[in-house]
Image 1 (cartoon, rainbow, N blue to C red):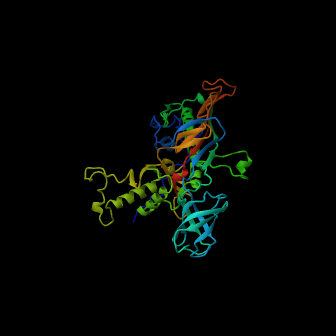
Image 2 (image 1 turned 90 degrees about the vertical axis):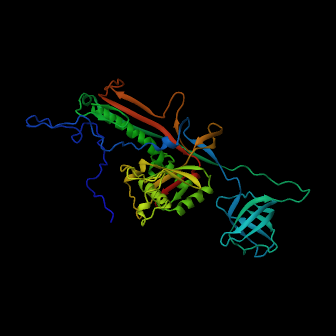
Image 3 (image 1 turned 45 degrees about the vertical axis):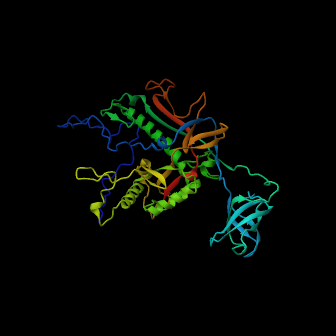
Amino acid sequence: MAGQLLSNPTFQLQPSAEQVALQTNYITNFNFLNQYLPDTYEKEFERYGNRTIASFLRMVGAEMPSNSDQIKWAEQGRLHIKYTNCTSAAALAANTATFTVADSGVTYIAIRVGQTVMIQNNASGVFNKAIVTAVPSATTFTVAYYEAAGQAFAVSTQCTVFIYGSEFKKGTNGMVGSLEAEDEIFSNNPIIIKDKYAVNGSDMAQIGWVEVTTENGATGYLWYLKSEHETRLRFEDYLETAMIEAVPAATGSGAKTAGMMGSEGIFYVVNNRGNVWGAGTPTTLPDWDSIVSRLDKQGAIEENVVFVNRGLSFDIDNMLATLNGYNGANAAGAASYGLFDNDVDMALNLGFTGFRRGYDFYKSDWKYLNDPTMRGGLNQTAATATGTITGLMVPAGSTSVYDQIMGKNAKRPFLHVRYRASEAEDRRYKTWITGSAGGAQTSDLDAMEVNFLSERCVCTLGANNFVLFRYG
C-alpha cells in the first residue's frame, strides 16, 4: 500500500511581506536578565530555495517594443478549400446535383465552374467525384458526377466537399473569377502592471540583526533592503504570470464597467483558438498519437516543448519506461532504460527529457504549475479539478506574420511580449524612487517609496499549434 504524507508539518504559503521587522523573522528577545543568551545564526536560512517562478517566457519568447495601444497581426488562412456541411437536393443515383453549403461563418463559397471536387457522406464514408457546372448563388453549386452510378447517397445527406483540381474542354475560356488570400486578423492590447515598496525614514535607521539575501543576489544587514528586493522579485514574477493568466474584460462585466480592458493571456488564447486535451494528462501512447494526429492537421511544427507540472512529468516518464521494457512483473529489467545500463554504483535516472513520436517533444518542468502559492496549490484531483492545467505544449522556433504596424512580413517567435516604448518613454520595466529618505529628495514625505511599472501584452502566434493540457 502506498504511503501518504501527513498534513503536518506543511509548507508556509503566506510570505512575511511586511514593512517592519517582525517577531517571526527577527530576534526581539533583549531581556538581559536571562541567564543564557541564545546563539544566533547570522545568516538567514533559505528554507524554500529559489522562490521565484518566472522563467517560462524567457525560455520560449522574446520582447520587442511597440508604440500603440493595440497590437495587430495577420495569420495565414488555409490554402485549400473544404466545406463540411453540404447537402444535396438530388436523389440517390442522380447524375447531377445542386449542393447547399451551410458551414458556420460561410457567406460566399470559393467554388468555381470547372473545378473538380470530392464529395463524401459524413456518416457512411461513401463518396463521389464530380465537376462543378454552375454556381447559382453565393452558397450553392451544381455538379455533374463522373461515376455512371450517379450520386452515392440519399437526398439531404450531410457531406464534406473539397476541391482537388479542375477540367476544361479544348478551346474554351479560362477560369471564371479569382480568389483572394484569406487572412485572419488578431489583436491584443497591453495592460499596465504596477507595484510599490515603501519604508519610513525612522525605520530605515534601525539596524537588523540578521544578514538577509534574496534570489537575485542582494544581501545585507538592513531588513528593509530585503523587503525592497522581494517586492522587485514579486513584481518580475507578475510580469510573466499576468501574460499567462490575463483575460479580456467582457462586455457588461464589473471590470469593463470600471474602465478596465484586460488582455488576452496565453491560457485564454490557447483555450479559445488552440488545441485542448481535456483529460488531465495523456498517459498512453495512443493518447499521444491522437495529439500527433491533431498536429498533422495544424501547422505540423517539427519540434515542440511541453511545459509540465509534476504529475504530467511522471506520467510521461512512466509511459516511456513501460515502452522500454518495464513491467510490474519484471522489476529486475525495469531499471535499464536510458543511454546506459545501470549498475550498483550508478545513480539511477528514472526520468526522460523528451521523445519522438511523429514529432520531437521535449519535456520541461514548469515551476509555475508546481508552486503551492500559484497554480500548484489548486485542486489536482481529476474528479473535481475541472479547468486545472497540467501542462502546455509550445511549438519551437518562429513564424512569419504580417505586422500591421510595420507594414511588412516579419519573423516572430510563436510567443513574444510587446511593451510600450518610444524615443521619449520606455515602459518595458520602469523603477524610480520618491520621498525624502534613502537618498531620495523628491518630496517632503519622510519615507522612501520604490515604484515599479510596466505596460505590456503577450502575442500568441499560431495558437492552433499549441496544446493545453487540463481537466475538463
